[in-house]
Image (cartoon, rainbow, N blue to C red):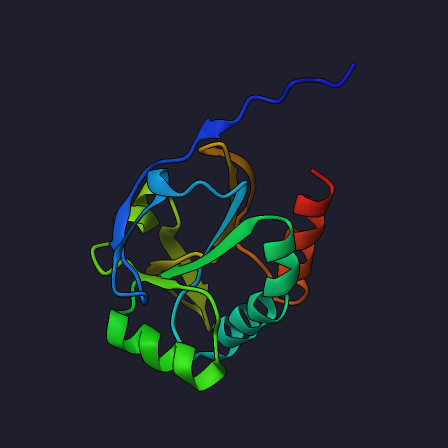
Length: 154
């Protein structure tokens, strides 16, 4: 008999989206929602991660999966980033860090010997308003494919 796992309820949030609307998590009815939190638009790791999700988007869509990227960058920055790389999914501008803090992706980081507060690259898969998988301190290489494989095998 398959063991029933206990999942955490996904925290709702309302954040401006690049589609010109306010994105509200609880209003989304897709089978799966992938939310990936990334530090900054148009930086090397974030660009690779976003482009990887973008190139796999048709495969995510076949699984009735919505992909959303969130950072604390503003809508203007997101729109430039989307246009530059022809990103086909929405990015959310969490300038007030509502979802970032709610999903505990804001914390201490180290870079080149110094510590500072920043966004910790993290990804969540949500199904039926519950978090069914999370990745913390994500390494960019092949991450989007790992997320897709998880959903395929759920």
